[in-house]
Structure formats: structure tokens, C-alpha cells
Length: 120
Figure 1 (cartoon, rainbow, N blue to C red):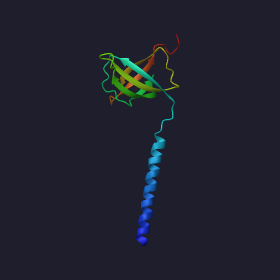
Figure 2: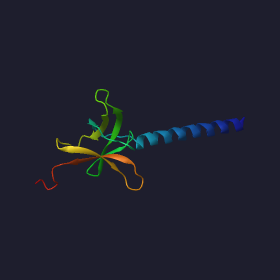
Figure 3: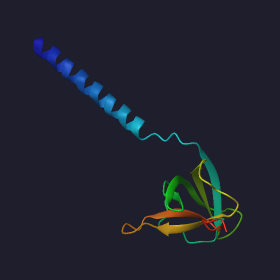
Figure 4: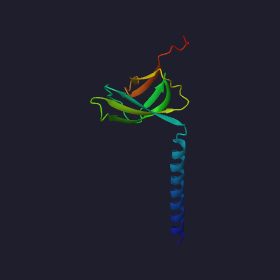
């Protein structure tokens, strides 16, 4: 009878530790930023771009790609939906390009502004 109680205690301990690890993983990977959605449209080749790819503003990570699809109303046009941090300085002059990361070649959306950094 004593062996069964030890086995039950060990089983409960394993279940408890597993639940703690899952809760810790969820807590560490949560994203609490307020995001604003934008939709990019264009007749471009998006090879290598995947949902959940990074969106960077002048090299700084500010969001993620949330969806990629073909435009049902315009032949050959691709629609890319991105979610960007509300604090990112997106303006009417901001434009997007497809960029690739160094050695890995992972594609991401690069946002830049056409206004020079010095404001002139």
C-alpha cells in the first residue's frame, strides 16, 4: 500500500511541475503590445515571406506579418496584412520593401520613411 501512495505522490508532482512549465512558457511568450493593423498591396514577388515574419521600421522590430493572400478583385496583386506597434512612427510617407536577413535569408518587411533622418 505504501508503494501506491509514493507512486501517486510522484505522479501528482510530475503533473504539477508540467503545468507550471506550460504556464511559464505561456507567460514568457505573451505579447502585450498594442498593435495597429495595416494592409500592404502591390504586384510584387514575395518569395520567402511567411506569416509571422518580422516587420521592422528602419531596422528595429516593430511587428509581425499576420496574413498574405491574393487580391480577389485585382489580378496579380498581393495583399499583405501586418500588425505594427502603435508607438512606431508610421506616417503618410512610410513605405515598405521586402528585405532578407543575412546568412539565413529569412524574408521580412522593412518599413522606411522617405523623409531624411535630419529632417531636411
